[in-house]
Image 1 (cartoon, helix red, strand yellow):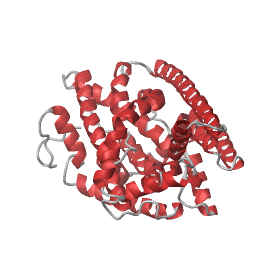
Image 2: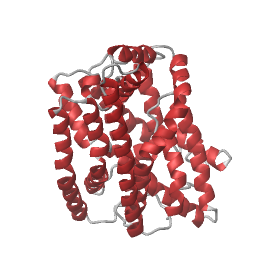
Image 3: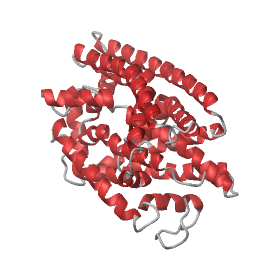
Length: 412
């Protein structure tokens, strides 16, 4: 397995572009606005409609696709290393250790919406599964998703109990403040808490970084516990999808379209019902959060694979070189997007945080997409790797890698 898979590169390009559709709200608005439209970004019909479309078609699906592709890449990296006479496990672990460094810098110094640190930790856990066949991989993934449901169910019950305790007459200040702090992160909190968040994001970079460094160490184990099982499940699904030929474009176009139709028929109706539930409860904070996390859990992988099948039917129909270039530079594009978005919205840049309504965030997204599609092929026409892909590879391998296209024979 030495050749590049254009279909995987294309899918990765779509994933890194698609994930910005949801992340832009986390960059530009108070944290609860990611889950709940009442927490920021405007409540005009068009803002609510955009939130609903993202809830149904994007939220969690792009992250799932990103994780699926990460799992497939793990198999590719290990098998290529073994084919080259190297220790595949050692190569993979070195890559994960280096990825953790990038993720930690991203998480603490740039943006706390980082997924790289989580992927590095879960990627270590994924290593023992790379030799398994699709059947066992899918069965283990199902068990992990069931475990994820239990974890999120327990978490939700604790949150319900916390809100109940905070609403009781005479509730102590610690309980009340704990509930409102949690509500601020997942939905609608107190106005003064939202104002404090806005002030911090519009303030100097040093204050934002200090806040991340102070609070981040407690956040990391929470993220691993809350999302770890699901992320590992998606990675195993990606390994199975690679081995089955699904991700490599080996299937006939009709087969991709049939799988897409089945997945959408299974996953869309209940996801739309969950969206309606959010509307019906007036976007109750816990209900909306539960719908986006625990409620959507059974359908995220189904919809992610359905969207991947639809994309693969499109990708295999003709050359998509620009999109493949975006995927080959997904690491640089992902981190570059964070730098660009934080420059636009945070105090160290243009300080537009919480100043733009939700609907007007998406022209910015489309502009970033255009930038990715323009600069990625331009860069790869001159260099063998994206700038951060080169840095990652060089650090993981313990030496500078050839960068210019004519520097050495191309390594895949």
